[in-house]
Image (cartoon, rainbow over all chains, first blue to last red; front, side, top):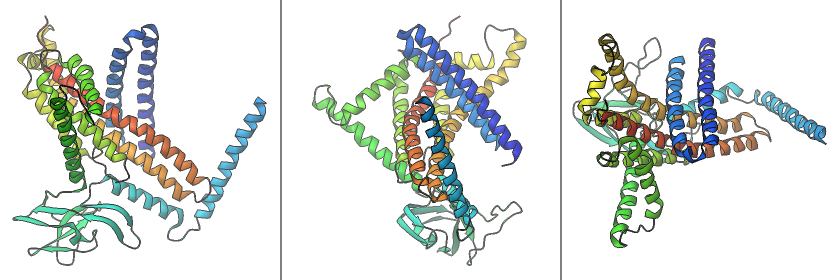
Length: 64
Length: 358
């Protein structure tokens, strides 16, 4: 682990965290507005979060 | 009142930090390399846990070379089939002689050596010895066979209970039926569609329960790490890739090579990107499951390893509390990763079966 690797890993985590956080926050707002659609919103949220997570992990592997 | 509790919390933290510091100083005096030695030992232990192995060891004492577990069969293809027990390797300490050839275990891999067991290295310290084709029944294979058998008996009892009780499940089936219905009603039908979901159900149910049970098996103290092995997730992703592309209709291929509804120039630009997407989709499935499970195992084991680093009253409760909380999180992740893998597989099957809508 050199310093660029560690900084890169940190940047990836920040990026993925912001992305997943925004998805989670928007899903919360959507559920608050339409509680009856919470099931569908949750599914869509999980898929989007999983896609970001996949890219985040791929980048973490590249950073190491 | 408020101020008092803030001060108290601050004092507790200060106390914890000081005691950690003291413990660290105390540990530096420890024999055989001190804290650094202990750290590398923990790292090696974790790296060893993440790998597949040729024997099933429950506990081990590396210093005294005592291992509690059982050996597994080794099957090699090296100028003919060679089958022997992994106890011949003595956990990598001795050279196994089979039919005139010599083999040695080195970092959980089998290398062909001479009678003394010499391993040659290149500049970057990788072994350059010849590797025979290894079809051994390793720890991961045993775990997968175990889970496969368990699933076979559980689902057979579900099917039989339907027959016996006029469509009512009993016993373990009462636990499985809602999960099967969940996979059908929440994963398969919304993503693939009412008409075509049936032929994919067997695959979706199999991967859902297979991944979930293997993830849960990884949480037991048996120390198996099957879904955190990239070869296993590669196999699962390969099956998804094959099923997606072999059952795809002409509409799917049309969307890849000649995207309808865009100008001709864009069609040419989009074709290679879409073709790349065909491979990236299963690749991301493989990486996601592998990285999630590996990360979970590494974090929990590092936290348990903290106990040996702080040799003071604070180390054990701290690492126990953290490991307990993270294990509960990992139970959630185990189910979530199985769900996401199945969900995305169903999504890809649905994409491959979409009818023309313009």
